[in-house]
Image (cartoon, rainbow, N blue to C red; front, side):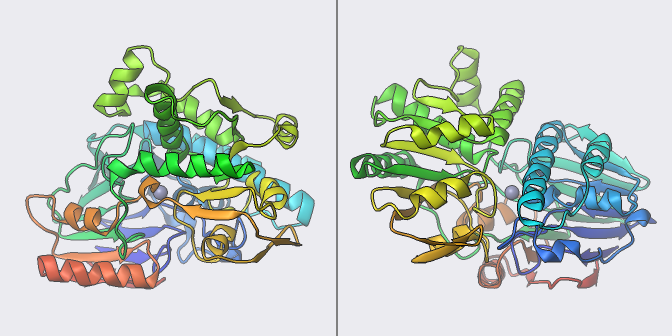
Length: 449
Ligand SMILES: [Zn+2]
C-alpha cells in the first residue's frame, strides 16, 4: 500500500489523503484549506493526483476542512462514489451549499475568485452514498468500516483493510463526555494510524466546569450590558452550546434574561437534521427527546434565517447574544456583528473552538488591538474570552488514551491535522507511552505501508 499526504499535514485544515491499495486509488477526505481567506489561495492549486483516476472518496465527517474541496474534485474529473455516514451525508450537503453561498457573496462583493460552481456542488452531492456505522464497505479488494468518532453528528474514523494490512484514519476525534453525542468508539487492530493532533499539546478544562464557565461568562456579558458574540461552528458546537443554554434555562433558571439570536441558516438547518437522527444520540439526549423535550429550543432563542431577519438584530436593545457563523470568523454573518461590536467596550466575544493560523478568530484570540474586516480597520475594545471545554476535539489526554484503546496498539502513527508544535508534542507522548513509531508527515510525502 502507498499513502500520500495531500493536506492537513503540519496544519489543521485541508484534510486529504490518498491510499493506493489492491489496484485502487482511494481518497480519504477532501477538505478546504482555511486561513485568512474563506477559500485560501492554496485551494486553487492543482491536486497532487489526477482526480479522474480516483476510484472512491471516503469522508470522515461534514466539517468544511474535510469536505470543502469535493466540488473541485468533481469539477476536475472525479467520477467515483463518495462514501459517508447517512448523518454526514445530510450535513455535508448543507455545509457545501452554505460554503458556496459564502464564496459567491465574497465573489460578488469583493471579486474573490470562485473555487467551483453551484453545479459542481449539486454534482458532488449526487455522488454521495450513505453508509451505516460498522457496515462492511467493499471497493474491489479494499474493505472499509466507519466507526463513531464522537466528534460531530455522523462523524467517523475509518479503518481500511487491504493487502493484508490495516490502516486507520482518525478524522477528528471528539472531546470526552460531550452532550448529545455518543463517546468515541475503541480503535480496532491496526498496523498504521493517521491521528489528528489539533490539541496534541493541550489539556481542556474538566467537563464538570463546562456549564459553570459558560454561566460565568454569560453573567459577565450581561453585566457589561453590551452584545455577546459567539462565532458559531454551525454543526455540533452550536447545538451543544444551545443544549447547555437550555439546561441553564430549564434546571437552574440561571440563564440571564436576554434575547439569544441564532443568526446562522446553516446552524438552523443542521439543528433540524439533528432532530431527524435520534439514533446518533447518547442515552441522556435520547431519553430527553423521547420524553418530548426539545432540548435545542427555549423561549429566549430566536432564529434569524434570512438576511432581512438578521439585520433586525442590530435594532434589538442590549444586552443580547448573537450566535453566528463562521466559527473561525473567516467569513459569514459574524463579520457584520464584529464590525459593529468589536469596538464596543461593553460587548464580549466568546470563542468556543479551535482557531486556525491566519484566521481573524486566531488574531482576536491572540489579543489583537486592531483587525481588518472587509478592508476596514476595526479597533478591538470588547472583552475576548475562550472556552476550551466546548471544543469538539479531544485534548492530548483523550488522543493518547484513544490510540491505546484497542486490543493492540498501532505499530506506527502519523500525527496529522495539527500545527507543528501540537503534532510534535503528541508524537513525543505517543513514543513515551506506547514505544511506537510516531511520524509528522509533510504535505506531499509519499510512504509505503
Ligand atoms: Zn472536524
